Image (cartoon, rainbow, N blue to C red):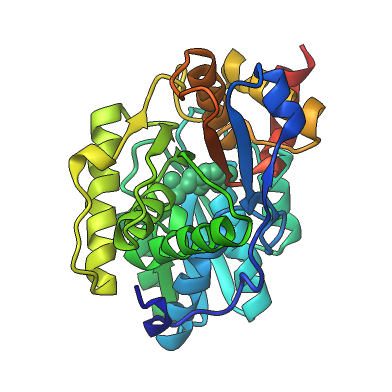
Length: 333
Ligand SMILES: *Cc1c(COP(=O)(O)O)cnc(C)c1O
């Protein structure tokens, strides 16, 4: 698939490591070999998956002569931190609209990503109640800034549109090349599935390149059927944008929802276990909202015997560790 037809800023100059986790594998019993794709090490303040998507989205914004970026997310959004980070690098203004998905969860003085919004010099933060139509809220802000002479560009939540998903099509191609170079057989891929651009891009890259490795998404908010539908539609729209003459089928999209717990961003015991286990065995930090819950899913699937003995399973580490510092109490008790 020809991704060179799309404008890009070059935020991902080198492949992120794809490596074996010997101690973590041993801690899980040794029957399944766990590998990790370190997208937590991507460039951009504190790293994480949004950098790959923003590489394409911000290039589009600059082509359209924008001088201001507007985006949205939850109160501890990694996506907002990285959008702000790249906007700063590009000399663009950045405005954030934060959705209080958990009532009263916004604290102006909170640590984690919120703290980083402040020191990276965000132009404005607007907090809106959970359930607000975020696109409408961004449109409204955009109209106001335009009336003041600005040229705003809106990036949707998680940069999960077709342009953003190209970043994960590219990641899949990077993994394919690493499998070749490392002579590595991969039997299964486990990915977090949130606003869906990551999962959709990976599947689109997989199907578009005729690689038949099963992908398991671990949902962090929506119910299974709803999430799978969102991923399927975005994956196919992305393939259409690329001009690939293939389609993802319903059977190729799996997004388990049993690791969400009581809701988006709310801690679970299995997330705490996953974060601690990877930290104490491999010194790699997960996050409480996405990669921690996704890893909790992988751990449970390994323990349940979901993967055949001797399988090589890759976990896509999407980053997010700054959010840990906003969740101290659940790790300290
Ligand atoms: C946004 C995010 C995800 C989920 O990716 P989507 O493309 O939104 O599904 C996973 N992990 C981290 C750390 C994130 O910030």
